[in-house]
Structure formats: structure tokens, C-alpha cells
Length: 364
Image (cartoon, rainbow, N blue to C red; front, side, top):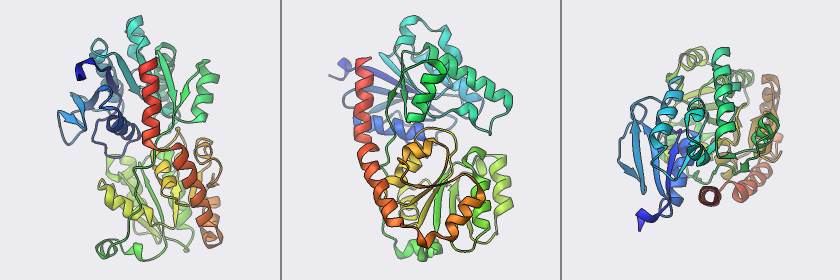
């Protein structure tokens, strides 16, 4: 009976069903593969979610009336943890937001909290210097007080060991939700660039994803148009950046696309996939591109090299990316894509990842 199952709360996401975010994607696939074996409740922000379903895919959804974005994310995560503390056998906390409430919890509650901080948010240049210090302190309190730690990239695992002397279990993200899609006539009419070669990226529009660097690089060449899909209207930075680069040759700036089929058409048929993330562990959009067998050109962050097992091409400056694009026809794109797909099929499948999470959840 379901009442006999272990009760797990997933805290730290905006909620599910997912619209883009990495932690949201993780939560959604853990629910898909584990909800019949574990009694899962996912905490959601009623301010962020368009829908307000009581359940999704076999998991219960509990809503907190605070946004998960920006500085309020710390309040949102803290309220969620406090609410979940005495109701669940285990709590999976995604992100840094609950750090400040951790010292207030009982020893028994701390012990049952499993943490995945994702990337190193305090390094993101979208935050002010003060905010970075606050986030770094939250991370420290979280890692020192929680019961168990998961890292999604070997770079994060090494960082946690060096910075906090804390061992963690390495579990990556999945990419097999991305599907190869044929281009229909309707799609060609809506997106004329599908009729020729193009580079593509789907990303959050924030500075640490090297948005300006990539746009500058593609503006400096005329070999290949660049399609960037992102949440341009969600921040002053996004609005100003779109205004600055709109109308420039070779740049096609599209608003966020939440229809996965439509997104897969654009993504799976690109000539090159560009990845600009500079901070974080295994990024879901990169894992998806790899699973699709796309030739990836990624920012040389260290984390991206780990994720791609050094089988992609890399850039660290706009001039380097421009030079790669100018010579893209000489790149063995098929070979790169095939190698990345082999890696993704081995390491970045959600069913495998969910089973790894299950082992951590039930045995710790």
C-alpha cells in the first residue's frame, strides 16, 4: 500500500510540470521513474507556476505562496524545509536556498536532508558582491549541516571535497528527454532558417551564460546564422541585451519556447550547438544536445569539459568562437556528435539517474 512507502519531499524547485530549469527537470524525472516506489511530494511556488495541480505523474504537489526567484528564493526554500521537516522521512533539497535555516533544525531532521547544490551560484556575476557572500555562506551552512550530499559533476565533487572536506555521491543529469524531430513544412514557414545551416542555443538569459560573448562572436562573421532561444523579458539585462543585438545580421533572437516538440525541431536540426554556461555542474541543455548527437561548441568552464569528456570543441573568448564558426565546414561534425551521443547514452539517461537517486534516498 502507498501509505507504507517512504515519504520524500523534493524542495528547491519552482515546481512541476517543468518549464526549462535544471532542478525542475530533475524533479520531474525523479517523479516519473520513482513515484510508484516512493511517496513523493514536490514543493512548488504558487507565484511561479502557471498551473496549480494537486498532483502530477503520481506525486503530490504542495504550494508555497512565495516566488522561488531572486533573493526571495532563500525565503521560499526555508519555508519549504520548515514545512517539510516533520512530515517526511527524507527531504531532497535542490540548490543553496535552505542554508540559513539548517542550523535551526534538529539533529534528526538534518540527518534526513539530502542536498544537491547544483552549481556554484555564488560565482554567478548576475549577483551583487553582497549577494554572492550571502549565497556562499548559505552554501557553507548547507554542506556542513545536511545528512548527505549529491554532486552532479566531477568538478563540483572535487570542489566540495577541497572546500568543505565533504565527500559526495556523483550523479549526473539526464538528456534523453530530447527527441530528434523531422522538419515539417509548417515549421519551415514559421522558422525560415530551418531551410539552411544554422547554429543554435537554448539558454537562460543571464550574464554568466556568456550571452554577450556569443552574440559578439556571431556578429563578427557571416558564415552561419545564430539562433538563440531564451527568456529575454524576465530581466532588465535580457531586455537591454535583446534591444542591443536585435536587427544585427546573422542573429535570430527568439523568446522562450515551452513547447518541447517545437523546441526539439529547432534544436535537433541545427548544424552546431553552442553552449555558453560558465558556472555550474552538468547542465541539462548540454546533456540534451549530447543525447541528440549534436556537434557541441562549449565554453571552456572546466565543468563543460567534464560533461562532454573533452570530446566537444571549446572557446574561452569571442574571437576564439568566431574563428571556429568561420571554419565550421572543416569540422568533423558527425564524428563529434556521434562521440557525444555515446557518452550521453551511457551516463545521461534519466531512468539510470533516477535509480541512483533511489539508492541514495532509501539507504541514507
